[in-house]
Structures are given as structure tokens and as C-alpha cells.
Image (cartoon, rainbow, N blue to C red):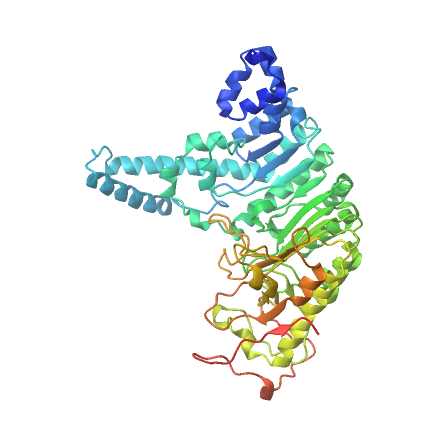
Length: 556
């Protein structure tokens, strides 16, 4: 049998082992192979279009949109708005100093290896000057795209890309982008950056460890504004919208440049929305102003699209201060889910009643639920305010009375009981829950008893997977807490049995790295006045104190 007579499915399978350039070369050998492999080729490389915001990236997107052969295959656009980890500001001196040190060290290693030295200090200076100029030019072009040009290109391209149903924002470290293997990660606009910069050169000049949420949230907010404007101007409806994506760092409210009329114009284009990832960062630092108007518009957007949503991720980072409980109260009172199957609540602070109300409207259809960095804010009579959360206060639980500790645990018990009675819930994951920003530790005895490697646990517990270059919470992967999950497909007990056997403990004594949950401003625990009784307050744990931790069984 000749190669060209093979069925299209086999041809496509063979092509999967080829490099992109090899596949492209094969496809232009004859019309038959070109047509036979088109579906597999387009599905692999054009169904999802990652887009780095560079000049070349925008040009490539326009080329795909103009191609009658390729544009019909595109289903999703993934916009990468971060270049150089959120554009840290460097003057020429600050940029060159680490680069000179890096090259000096490289020169020393070459000398040790006996290699011939070709570069001089003068050449180093000139090369770093040129590298800085290139860095500045790339940064200025990137900022211009985020300021206005992205919306113009989306307005032009989206009407042609009629099958695009998903628009996502994604963030990747610059080091990952420039090192990425084209076979495993293809991105429009990436070739321009790889041609302009070398990872060995840039690693000596830019601190890649600066990949933090507060640096990413500004370009995410600007990109979201441009995406919304592009959707409005093109009148393009989407079914999935992701405002933050893989980083869960949140778009900065102050960076969102949308008017009230633009928010109103967006809503009719979201009537078919079934998937929403809405991640908000209230402030980056203490000097930021809380943009209450933008926050309310975004919450109103969520309320409007809720009836048709099937998947929702909602996060509202507020690492510097507690939000008024009225915000989530209004949200939980107005939101109505009718088809929601999957819900992820991250970095949210709310009262038990608001949480129960929010979950109750989703309960009839909800099948999967995760809660991470969720902090309750109910007032407790008798709670002594320990003040702002610091590393030194990691033993804060030991300064509260046993009565207050039991009340905190009772609050979470009420929430867990609602989960236990959810009719269709098949999967639950809990990680880093707390009270007023202070962490509570969960214990799953069923996992501890049967969690050995050679046994099948009745519930699934694992440490959250934290990649070294990607952080998913403000602790930057330092939390020692465990994410406990229940999966009905593998568990030998019911969800209610699993929920009700969980035990809770206040945060470990000093020495444990505390997780930073939302609501860490130290606002009073007691909104009706402090009634602490010093006679019932336990003294802080000291070195060698034999007193055991406080454990409370969920069961009555």
C-alpha cells in the first residue's frame, strides 16, 4: 500500500510524531496529503491559539483570521498579557549591573575550563546597552498593545473567527516562554521574542523569581478591558470567559478601564455563557484605591450570567484588608443558578449564612465543588481581636478561649452539613479554610488510616501541586496544609459520612508557616463588643508545653 493511499486517520496518527516544520513540509508535497491531513493539522495547531501580546503576535492572529482554510478551525483564543513578569521597571544601571556580574562569572568559568576568552569588558558594556534598548522597545510595544491595540485587532478578527467560543487570559513566566519547545508549546508572537532575546543573556538581567500575583494583576486587568472592548465592538458572543486562568492571581480592579455603558453593552453578548473564571484582586498595595464601582459592575455581571452557567470559578483576592460582608451578602441574595455543575470558590471571605445561601441555589445541579483559602467572617461574642496577621501570630488560636474556638468550629460545621445534604454532589475538595484570615487545619481520619501507598483510600488527600514557577496562592507555595478531597467514584462511603468524620484544629503553634487567607487586616472579631473572659483564655503555648492541640469531632 502506498503512503498516499493510507486512510486519513492513519496519516494523521503518523503526522503526530513529526515536528511542526516537518509536518508543514509534508503537507505541501501534494494536494491529496494536504487535504487528508488538514483536519488533524488544524485541530492540533489552530483549534486553540495562544497569543503573546507582541506586534508579530497580532499580525499572526490577523493572518489566521484572513485564511479561509484555517479560521474555521479556531475555537479558543488564549491571550498571554504578561511580558517580563508584569513589566518590572528597570533603569539602565539597574538592568546592566546584574548582567555585568553574570558575564564576569561566566568569564571566570570559561577560564577555569581553559576556554579562549573572546569578549572584553567594553564589548560587555555595548552588548548590555543594546540588550537594554531592545528590552525597552519590546516593553513599550507590549504596553501600547495593552492600552488600545488589542481591542482594535479583536474587533477586526472576531467576526471572521466565527467559531471562537472561548476567550481566556493566561500567564506564563518569561523564562518558560523563551525556553518552550515548539513541539509542546506553540504561541503566536513567541518567535519574535525568541529571535530578539536569549535566555542566557536575559537571566543575568531580569529576576525571574519576581513572578508574583501583584505583578501580573495589572496586565490582566488591562487585557480584560481590551478583550471586553473587542467583544463589544465585534458583537461576538462567547460561551466561555476566563479573566485570570492558570495563575488565580486576579485582575487588578484599578487597571480595568471600562465605563458603565460598556459593562451594559457586554451583558447581551454573554447570554450564552456557560463557563466563567472570574478572579479579582482588590488591591496590590496599601496605596491603591478600592474601585468600588468596578467591583459592583463585575458582581452584577456574575449575577446576570449565573442562570446559564455550568462551570464557575470565583475569587476575590483581598490580601490587605477585609471586604464589607455586604458585598457577598448582596451577591448571595441575588444570584440564581439553575444549571451549575462545577463551582470553585477561591480566596473569598463571607459569613456562614451567605455561603449557605450561595451554595443552596446551586445545590440541585452541583456535582463538583472546591473551596480554597475561604475565610468565614461571622462575629463571635467573646472573641479577642489578635490584630493583623503576622508570622509571629501563627499561634493565634492558642490565645483564644476554648469557647470561642468551639464557636469557630461550629460555624464551619454548619457549612459542612449543607454540603453533606447536597443531592448530586460527587466531588468535594477543601484546602486552607479559616476564620478572619486565620487558618484552620482539617484532619481526615479515614485517609490517615487507609492512605498508605498500597491501599485504596476511601477519600483522597494530597498536598496541592505547586510548580516552582507558578504560584496559586499568596503563600507562594509555602503552605503546609493538605487539600482533602472526596470522590464518589472511588470512595467506599457516602459524602455525608466523609464530611461528618472530618476534624478541625486551630492553626499550629509558632513554628508553622501560616497560610495567608483573605481578611487579614485584624478588624475586630466581635462586631457587638468585646466580652473576653481572661479567666477562660488559655495562655500562649511555650517551648516544651505538653498541652495537646485542640481537636473537635464534627459528630455529635
